[in-house]
Length: 198
Length: 138
Image 1 (cartoon, rainbow over the protein chains, first blue to last red):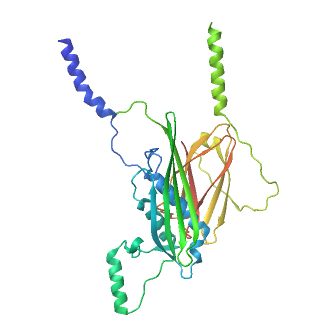
Image 2 (cartoon, helix red, strand yellow; image 1 turned 180 degrees about the vertical axis):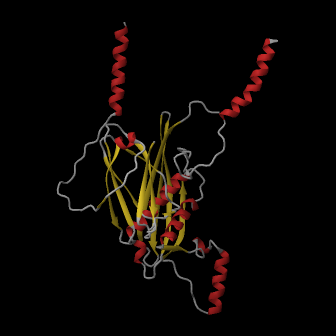
């Protein structure tokens, strides 16, 4: 009898205990201190930090101010992902593009892309149509291309694992083919593997 | 018997304590070529513990060739142990309105015992005239 009562009470309390342990869904600041950190993954705060670093460096260097017709026009070239993780490189490039556009120092073309593919095919079509009607070329050739690579370097000792993510970017002058700005941001994360995993 | 256990234990604790407390020595040129343009600052301290450990020595600013404000802050770890903190720059225009920047991160950082280090940031656009930096202990 006693056993049945005890078991019933335990069964009733179990969902409460489990429910109490679960984290209630809530909003946090993107890239803020509460953000989750994974050693083997690029987290959103890493992308924000890398983009901020690249933008600051670009603005500081003044390379974008040296074009004949400011603001400079940038075309996004290849960003190679050499990490073990599948990532959308727009998480990096879009932040840089937005920041540069807001700074008034550069604009990005959406009608020219790698291998002739336009980011915005409709805009490209309309642009070609207006060029045909006007019978003259109005497309501005980009002053620069932005290319880069994201590399992951792994290290492990005992139960501690470490990942370094290198965000390497180059801004190439399309007239000369020379890299006029190069930036590298390295983010290293270290953590222990959990002793017990579910 | 008790002493036999206590002495090695005390030794281990002492070693661990010493291991965590390493302080940095520095050397630099005495006759400086560069002149820092220092700015007067206004501080709001709510975490006195962090302010004591990681003190703000001074702030200097300069303009980049593109006419963008660049700010540099010198920090000093007054303790002998490594301190972890996070900081975030905020920028304001001539009307005191905050400029929203898509790539404005909270940057985790660390400073060794006795170390003096600089953190810096470049304004996201030429319209930025003022700044604020927030520090929080990790």
